Figure 1 (cartoon, rainbow, N blue to C red):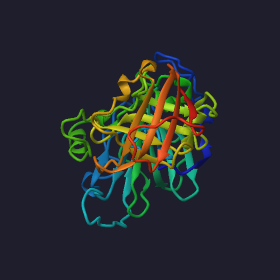
Figure 2: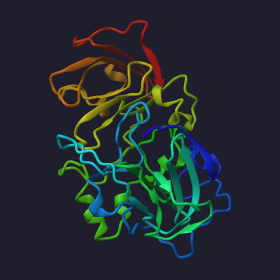
Figure 3: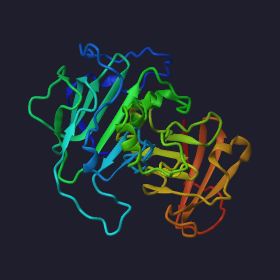
Length: 346
């Protein structure tokens, strides 16, 4: 849900920009005087939307370019089951509850009416709920208790739930300077729910039954094609995560529903935004190195194994540099680079 937002109240924005590759539990983002509530625990006890009033949830890692060219660092509550046909529209407004006790640390409003609200639960654990129409009176520094109503959904609307824990570090963000702190320390929120809520949520998750229920988003491997790439014009900062970077990103990752399936997400610039699959016999991005030279990927519609959208040419020029070109509409199996090729970096 990539609507640009303008900060209204809350922490200085640098809390949510890259931490420059720091490791361990230390975090340097300003707290603006916001402290966690005494005795609060890094766990969720209440579903933000009542269990019996929504259709499904998703894991981390949704792809929806250009706003989500990179796998999302948050999960979704959907009130409608979009896998069923015909889709039944829903216009109900639902209460949104605080899943954990926390101090309001940040509030942001998009162009419309809903807000993103971030809570500090402990020194290390934070969470946010997005696309909420807040109740009157919510303000920076206010302590909200688990189960309190913090707002409502838009009519028939979905909400986002994200969580990050500074005790958790990941290895698959090859260039940490590109990412916000909340992404670098992302955690799957479902693991933090207490039982029986956790099991009730997992039962509603849109995830292949054979897959690990807790998805990941840090797929990068140094020296391999797999993971996130950024156009050479994008500064080597967390600006890559913002609107300026969205259309200039490319991701070679895995499907959030079935992680055995490779997905190539294109934000724009080299081709119109989209998410594509590749044939089963094509080289896996996790195996492609400089030594492979040029690789030609037939970009397939994700709902099909036979319909080809176009042809992608990609070559690792160095461990942290690729050239890439998309021939939209081409049904060829191979081609050569021409003047349309562009360079992307880690």
